[in-house]
Figure 1 (cartoon, rainbow, N blue to C red):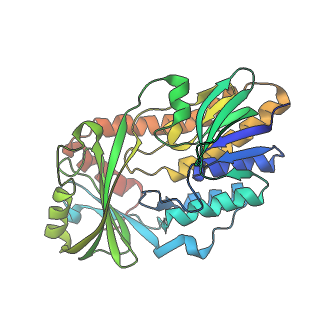
Figure 2 (cartoon, rainbow, N blue to C red; figure 1 turned 180 degrees about the vertical axis):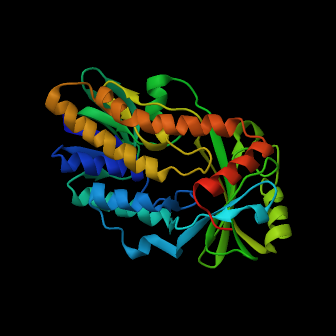
Length: 356
């Protein structure tokens, strides 16, 4: 008999969602997290409102007030290449601003309350899938041990060890360059999405959080390092149209996100969240897809144990619709000129009944 029904590698939203779903299906679940109780995760910390609904309704987790930053609710404002005057705010559309570190801990705590065994400061170094999974785990003190399970879930992020061992190839990434700044300007309680080739090949953004502004741009891997000031063009634009005046840069962060690859896993090993490439390349948002794929993986594993099918077969049926949506967005993003960006924003303003 294996030690566990399921081993989940990675304790972010994808891994915690998978672990909670498995545990609530009655499966003996082990969650392995390489960090500690709190682990800083670079992130814009913006969720669509539906993501909180998913966490509450599908995972049964009430999100406490300390997860939310201020302002908690943000509007969505599109800014096309021609400028703010031709942009607009989505009427009735709400985004949620959160502290990512606290959200991750909340979900891991919920996993433990659901009966999941959680090992912190522990990493996966190797695994075998031969009609069952044997995983080699390394603790922070250098000690290693082997554990077995029927299924393994790779929720170990964009640089996934699990995905690498299955597919053996490097996947394309987009890098997000982000700053927290003390600044002033005509910035309302909105997430501003900027679309202009001189700002980013994908997207730029600005939002208020507490007493700071958070701003970022997506940078292609091949361009990383070529521009010593990735945010320069965005800041010039902000100065011209938003009266932006910077006082001090508090923090700078760079991290990779998936960009145009989509993987499911193989056999008894499933991939979820960033490890599966599930991230919106136009906005960088991935937490919603992490939760959805984590829940889908947990349900697929439980179903496979009942009907004898392979977990990846059932999971693939559930996740391919998400993959199709994100693949279409990726193909669209790749081909964007400023003219097409202008048309895109205009059409979105009309389609979503935006107000100027």
